[in-house]
Length: 378
Image 1 (cartoon, rainbow, N blue to C red):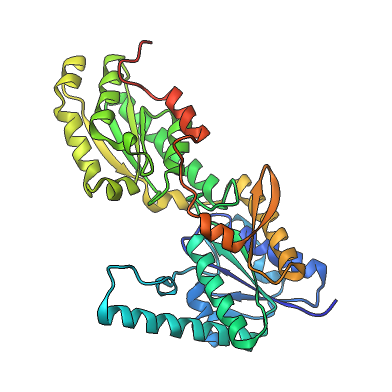
Image 2 (image 1 turned 90 degrees about the vertical axis):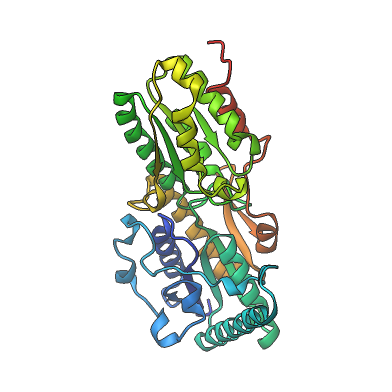
């Protein structure tokens, strides 16, 4: 087999399990042939489009990836280059021209770097934005050098919003961290008979909020995709019902993206105040219900990866290495469908992403049966 050179980068938000994916790609590439070379890019797309002498590790050996499987985050660093995407409609005039100039500079630098390194393929571990950025660079590379660059995507994002895979690397760890925070909150608010609004990660998708709310026994869940879930009166009705049913602790799980889609940037604070001032809740309890707003934030994405995330990362990493060495010369992504590794054209993945919670989603139906409802008869 001819000697091949494969690059790896992690991009976008960090996700527990990325290190396991890097390790799996490296070990599989070397297992196929010890003569194959692996190149690591530092700081994600920033490294790919930066100065080569400070942004990559070439011809790494097994000691470089030793013991990284247990670590959270990504040991080679991550980063974003928003200019790889087309400028938003709000960016106009000179600012738009500057954006497009910067975009051309990034693409030109990246394709020259890739050419200088002589890569046969690059594996990008990240989310939708990372895949789109690498696809743009790959297209420019082929146009400039009349030679395709194989791009293989591995879904790594705690948001779990990538089309073409049922799970993305990092989601399970973030979910477990969020449920752990919810359980710790429950202990103290149960002692004091209070309400807690827990804001969790999820800017455009509510998968973490939905799954954590179900697994942690929340009274209600607020999702950016489903307007009814974050309508204030509907949320208050569920809390009033919980108060009438003598719940000692009441937990509301709110995805952070609800603030944006509702047009109420201080929605969490507003909700706490409305709960404490609600006359029906006061009448049911004989006193006001104290409420607290808590935000889990980056804590959700930190810590050791779960066994599931490391297993998923290992499976997808091996599959990505095989695609990088022997796949077709078109950008693809490896994902998990029906517990089997599947390969999708990257163009289809980016076309259908982000994968959001649908009104007919099975998990939403489950939540509908388990959450507290207004006028609940039991």
